[in-house]
Image (cartoon, rainbow, N blue to C red; front, side, top):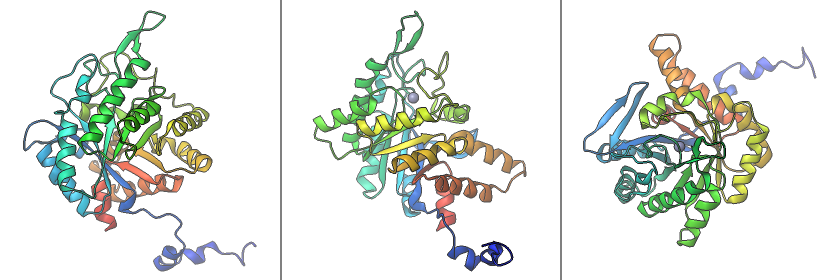
Length: 328
Ligand SMILES: [Zn+2]
């Protein structure tokens, strides 16, 4: 069928028709809000490169989560800012650390909010890498994969005990999903969901997050464990491995510069898929809007919609609260 019989513009003529034939929907149900929790009381420190995002103490975090829950956002993912760091990142598994304390407070009050705990050591190591370091065969310092696994598992158990429904390993060590699944199952926590950051790229778009979470590596970079931005076939292998190890949901991170990967993962595996609309993606829109160069709301919603259209079921985004408000 071709023109003039076929006129695609007919269905675009007014909003009612457009609504009827709309293929992709964005709902608060799709959103998870990343939040940064620190010590102290009454703390709500705005992150310079992420306007509208804050480092929060447990009490102010609780307020924020009440608001998110009331807006219909089903989940939050917590990142911790510890008071002390060491070479092993032992603070990640400290029961009185910011994340377990926040989880206990949130669990007590917000029964229906899904509580996700990011599981990694980089916020807790004094060198900022995602696990303890060791010398490789070439004599260079690198993250010791196999020594990292039990430390991640230990942190996951602490978060689960404090009230996390979901643990989300973001470290990109080989074998971490199996390590977490095994540890959880052996301690009677087969109920805890694992969201694996399956295809996490070594990306420049994480810049503002590192300020937010104080987790920039003190030397080198993370290319020895995070994925090369040039690779997509490799992402398929990473996802397959994590699913085999027991991941319930897999994630692609970042989202916008990797929509092809989001699309391919969904097409190939047809499993629950999350995408992380990262700090740099958020900051770019905020910065352009502040300069009057973009319509912030319109562009932010378009970006979130594009992540859904590519195939993500769940979007982790710093726009969660604003988007949920707009969608209400
Ligand atoms: Zn990390």
